[in-house]
Image 1: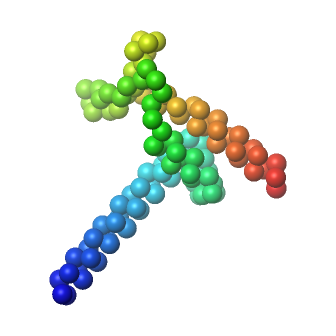
Image 2: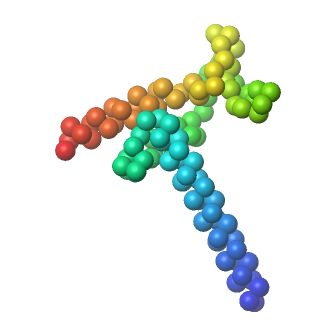
Length: 104
């Protein structure tokens, strides 16, 4: 019974570590998108949404020779290391932030 309790604690600790790692990932991506971290905690959902956004039609994800992710659009025959939706999420953040500032 005691070992079951320790296993639950270990599993809980792993879940906390995973959630901490995910939060750091979201915060880093938020900063990459131009958010103020700390400062824009109430807008981190935009970074979370950006991290889980599917690729637009025509785009595929690949790894280069060094293991870095890049994106390829077969229709336009272009590749980029920036996710094709990053600019859209950056603009979306700026619009939401502007609306917040207008309401204050």
